[in-house]
Image (cartoon, rainbow, N blue to C red):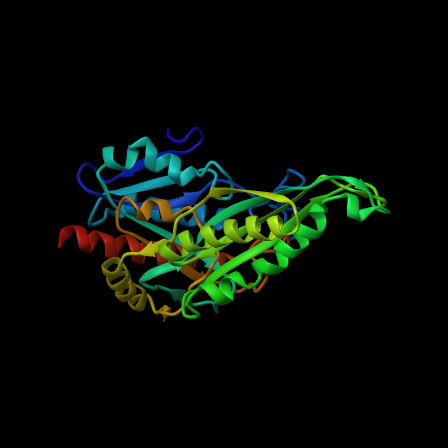
Amino acid sequence: PTAQTGAVLRIGGSGPAVGVRGELDALATEETTGVTWASARPGVMHACGHDVHLAAVTALARAVDRVGGPAPLLVVLQPREETYPSGALDIVDSGVLIAQDCRAMIGAHVQPVLEPGVVACVPGGVNASSDEFEIVVIGESGHAAYPHLTRDPVLALSQIVVALQSVVSRAVDPMAPAVVGVSSLQAGSAANVVPGVARASGTIRTLSKPTRELLHDRVAGTAESVARAHGCEAKVVFTRGEPVLENDPELTSRTAQHLVDQDFQISSTLRSVGADDFAYYGELIPSLMLFVGTETDKPLHSGDFLPSDEDLARVAGAMLAGYLGAAERLIG
């Protein structure tokens, strides 16, 4: 047992091992697939393919247990991929991977933007770092009929939101993917009262560590300066999430050959500013995240997302390729 509700399982004896992750958590999404095995709990489903990943890990574990493998397999059953605190970070911090001599970590994720039979096996950064920010603008409340006697935080916050739209376009190299987005606004409760406080929250995504720090500075500086120009004060709080998910080049190269041996088509270009806490494993040991095309084109977090049994088999095959590629690295 590890990370409160997670676990690791070693198959194949002692020595350096290859880890393969399966996620345990569901999402706060109402399932609308209508299948007989749909979630029995209202408002919760494995909409992001976590059930597929877990079933694929189970298939790989049974195969290695039955016929053996070139290296021990460490099955990592990870909680809380979708929520904070991160389950992957808790597993890394627990020391269990070091204690089990885990030398590489493999993950595979369904990806409906790819055609079935296609696997993205890409070196370097493939998922973005993901941070959240909250902006609190403090003004002075009053009657809306007398705006000159107030310091309007709603107006200030509105200008901040508009100003943040130019941060990426004017501060970040156009060749470096990055997102600064505001997704939540709260202020006031009456039509004729200027509130004293207005709040906004949003996300920062980037595939570059230096850009990540740059955007933190620019978001804070922009919010504080614009608020001050309107006679208000802005306080900005950041919540750091996952780092950039970096695929190890050697693992990528070795795994690609095993994917070809299974007649998969390789995509070497797919990168996303989506995030996955699998990135924490890459800060500890060489890691590889594969993205596996699906027969369904429904979005990952939609209530009708339903990969097929064939998709499950493809994910298991991709995990097998990653395991064999990592084992070759260990043997070499």
